[in-house]
Image (tube, rainbow, N blue to C red; front, side, top):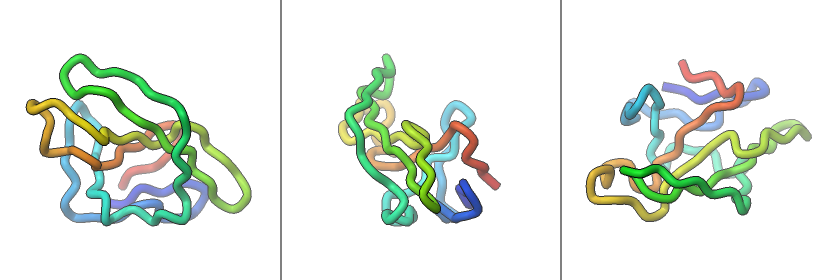
Length: 92
């Protein structure tokens, strides 16, 4: 699977985990040069608190377009640190 935005591959892996229709990419599969952590957080009742990245590609930003769970509940421990995408990021 590949996560693509603004004609760049943000992450690529054959070991994504699909939860609630989202592909979660292993931490070592992301191209870190495109990811900037920000202060956005949301809470999922069963996964825990999500942290977000702003994507920066070719001089453009896509705020909060990727998220991950740095600390996670026991129910979702398989995706700890994995990264998922939305906001126009193509997964194919």
